[in-house]
Amino acid sequence: MEEKTMTADTPNRVSRRNFIKGVIASGAVVSSAGYLWRSSALFGQQPSAPGSVERLITLNVNGQDRRVDVLKQETLATTLRYKLGLTGTKLGCDRSECGACTVLVDDVPRYSCSVLTHTVRGKKIVTVEGLAAADGTLHPVQQGVIDEQGFQCAFCMSGFLMATVGYLKTNPNPTRAELAHGISGNLCRCQDYDKILTAMMRGAENLRKA
Image (cartoon, rainbow, N blue to C red; front, side, top):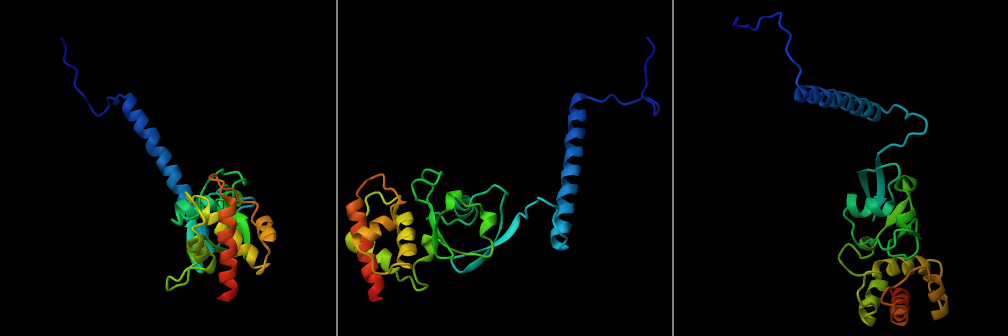
């Protein structure tokens, strides 16, 4: 039998594995090129294409400017919890019903699960982590919770705190009925609303004395 030898003119067989590797490599090159183009556009301060959303943005959270990479459809609750590590903001229903994710945006209570992160650029965001003073002194409303032991499981506590602090900025001396109405957008799965309201009223009293 005549022995076949490999010469320079003999074409190399393309195996299935080599073909797949080539496809993956080609995709990586294209992806990298796109990333480099976006980066050059960003750092070169070139205008974004119509309809596009800048991903690397600056948020003012608890008095600090934070740079964060966010998706176009990303909610503020997701950004706070999973990008910035501020897990005091809770995700309960994730559809604007329970209020566990309440934060302050320019001093107004908002459900962060239904606020797109891109829409709050240039605004001041405060989470429950930002209520206490720099020296660790609790906010008067936080102290009211301790004074009255106002919660059971406390999953909803941060939402109630933020809603109360926001409401007291507009009505610092509410009646019990007024405060109940003011924070009625927050729900407690333990359903001890009377005790929670007592704690929030104590917080309002502490705030007036501060």
